Image 1 (spheres, each protein chain N blue to C red):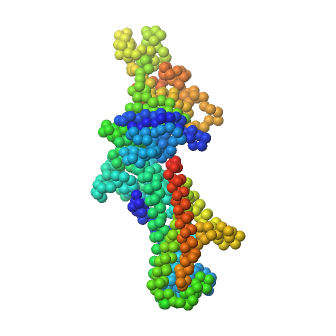
Image 2 (cartoon, rainbow over the protein chains, first blue to last red):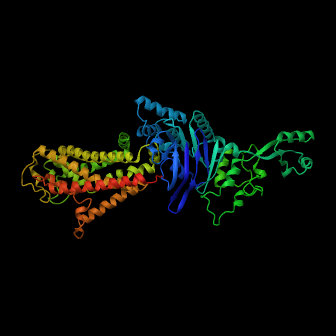
Image 3 (cartoon, rainbow over the protein chains, first blue to last red):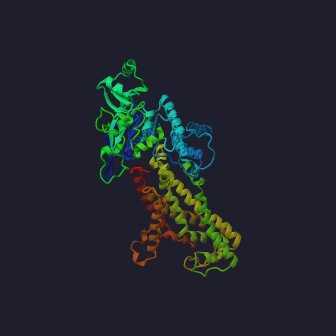
Length: 358
Length: 276
């Protein structure tokens, strides 16, 4: 659906995107992650023909960009860096204008109105009145942007930070909407710095860091088990003695046991009369994988280059994932993997993802 | 796209406010003249004003002379400067291009909307001032045209109402075309920046420079090529017979400006990164 080869964009001396080979397949729900300033938006703009590449190739739906941009864009819906609207017009008037501006905007008056109404309904704005957009809340504007992207039943949806400004219910709603669209055959290319958004929606994930695409993998691969099991037990001392060296790490009642088979471990502990509060296979979390692959975002400006370990903040165990890939830090492996390290200091990036999870 | 651009223009409050202001100035002047009946002495004050007291049907020409130096170009520069930069500022430029509206197409639509605005403005000024002029000053034969020797060489020959109407129409078209030069300049600058204000100010800066140089003898060598050099040539429409020389040069010069600036706008906009 989207293929780029050695795609590079330089703005003056700054290389915003460096030799990126992206591959989004038809039917994917692709999530592009990366810290602020890692080149996500520039990449998206190049794919959509807004920004011209310095070198490299882009193909969208098999057509070269920017040579065939206008043909390709007919089947693309996009939300790039926040919605845009004429502030003195109502949301409905904005969509009507946008609809009439391009190809496929024809049809009878009724057909055009229906199209606009349907897009508004999908984005959850069907009840909106004739107030001008300047009175809209951030969330309403975001929904209007989504409605504009959905106006012509696109085959490919390119969404840059689609849930910006939405409340948790709104985020959930949009996720459901995107899943439904995807089930009906729309490929979704989503760009976000919110880990939770990508983790919950996407089937494939790419990670950008300082202009490079440092990772591109299936979500199932990313979320693979680490070969350890997390056990919470009030009888932790007995468990450590019993397992004899199988415990890699202990944090009060919480043990990290090296074994791939949680069921077998559970049976064994219970057989010995130990009480178990909680037991589950430890998986790599998307956060671990992403933080491991990326440096600090460009909005963090330290006087000295930040040491990677500094990002952990207090409370994260020293054998963090960033250093040893195969040994995720104990404190980040709780739950089913979606939760974030409880003790980590929220930096610019983690902080935002936390809000939506907690 | 062209239709939607025109619709945008029509639905924009600013369009009507600026038109009201443009038409308001001649109206205010007319009221003062009508009440006091004190006309500026011939050769002083705005062009034609001394002549209109006896015949209101010439008032459109006087009104256009009033708004031409500053008011009209300012509003045209604002609208022209807004064309691309304004879309960028509201965040709509990228969505229009993604819709997709081709860049060339968008530029053409903007140009047409701009032309429509210019013509609308000039016609509105002429029409309202005609109505006001006739209402306040009445219509007598236009033979009193020799109000200012500087601008009319009419040797006492009277112009019939039809002739006056025709010549005012010529004037409207000529001034409209002259304004298109400013509009094209603002449009050109508008493709460079995301700030409509910057584009409008840039166009006005060029305009003021040109107007200063036109009056400067030391700049005589460049004067024939200045944007505003032949703006006042429309006065020649009111000579008898019409003196075409400067009018023709003015039209040719404006055509060159418009052509070059539009080509440059297109070259820039079609190859530019849209990062707004």
